[in-house]
Length: 510
View 1 (tube, one colour):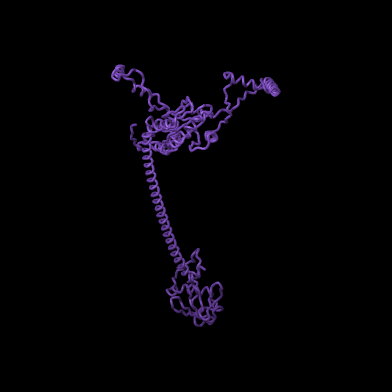
View 2 (tube, rainbow, N blue to C red):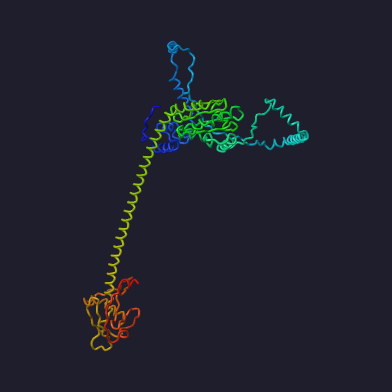
């Protein structure tokens, strides 16, 4: 076979996908897979069916091949006859002749009963009743005279031409797997235990496995009614030499057996042109014919000694092994290339996943940084807005603080206040001054010291001021909080020493 080089880059995406799906199922080399897909119009299902069932011959290609291989002129034939000294008789075919081996799928027997129309049933009702009466009478007659049915059956056996052709074996048709299991069980019951490994499925499954794994399919068909069946099984099939040869893994043999009493084995015998039992055929993939062909490379009919039986099989295996080795090497190379491509794709996918993960982490970091910056800006704006509101509130609140009473006012409270900066302030307050005014004085002290602007400032809207300090009397320690309320005359008395004690943030949060 000429090896052709195909540029996969010339295929489109749909064709590449079809090629990948086809080769994953069939493990066929690309040089044969692409032409088969082209002949199948890139239909994967049709191509797979052609691969396993065999491709029908193309009449156009056959005509071209016939024209190309037309016989030479008559003069050449005469010259060859004179030189070789041979007559015009055709040369005998050698063992290299191969016949196509079809893939047989057993057809189930139809058990559908014919149901006539209702009108015909009504018309034939009297005849049906008459038939039942006559059959009942004959049954009673046969019961009274039991020797008559035996005589009639013997007469029917003597005249087989008049007897109807129907299955009298009583074997119930089963699916291929169950049929194989039944045959193996009956075979062991008849001939005892053995070392052969029968294929426990149908012929089509063994055919597909041999084609896929490039193995030899040995088909053995027997007929229980044949006289040589028992001798063939005991002296050839179950012999030590044949069993060792078949079970040798170096020969790559799949053994499928069957009896022609079963429908599947009978169909296989007809497809393989079996004319004599017992029968054996060796089927294998022949790449020298085509990329999907399965051929029968040898047939063994009748009884042969075990040595001759093995020699026939060994000769056929030896002839076909080089072609199969080339296909195996090609498939191994393709599988290695496929594995390498899969590893590269896997490494690419892993690298792509790592890049995606790094990109995701970078985006998350950028998003977190953007959120932190936004939160910082929002917090700074809030602090600035708080400072502006506090300044506006101090401007407004300082206007509400009453001035210090003069020395002539008697009802006053003299308070010494130590500020957080360490400065001490001594001021007199009217006794009826609320405790909140005292807190406001401390809050607005710096503004009062710098001088109050003459302009009137309104109270800031949507702002609620919270004092971040407490007025505390050190000895004895007493906190004059705003929640208790009251006036300085009642809470402090005529005089007092107070400390401005800031409220810590933890205490504020608590």
